[in-house]
Length: 283
Image (cartoon, rainbow, N blue to C red; front, side, top):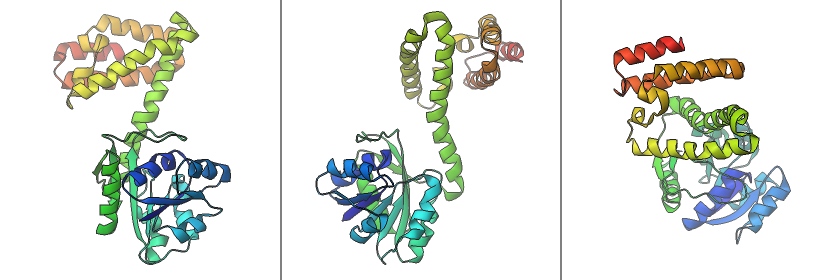
């Protein structure tokens, strides 16, 4: 199977070696920035950078469209497709129907979204990663499943009507974690200094992830700190300190702590009386 990529960003850098590991020949890549396509092609034997997306479609049996979500439909509509060809996008929020133009021309269409942080310039270690897979033909489904398995990942389906919710959840995990970590570091800068703030947080962040992984789905058991202990006085001190020292963060802090408190209470970590008192302190 010959494979081509339209786009040379992080997804392409991660999926090109996954396709090769599954025994497919990645033959061409094109990108809006030709130099990006050249670098990616040079890193993989047998792959060449080409001038246009159409040049990719002309030589590849399977074409991955790895461009921003809002460009997927336009890219697909601008290409000439062959009956029997396959087109796949990697947008998290969009269904395979975003490639309707390719489907009308006789191509089998699908969507493959790795729930994994990918980085431009290096392949991803997909072992254990979840891939949201949608395919409008059994042949394409089997082909994509083979790529995922060869990369060490696992496949699952996301109902079309739930695609946006799925992507919102993914974004919450990735971006909100970065945002909250950055805001916490900003607060810590007042106590341990700018240079030491992030270094102090990273072990806590890793520990939180490990606790969640060990929780077996009972995430309330991974909660630590005053909410995990039911310590209303310390929680009040936190609210007071954030309100005085970083008032712009107070609404976010309180909102997050309320949800954390609900998780702890639901898990049975707190008595109803302790949970009620802490809600009063947050209110």
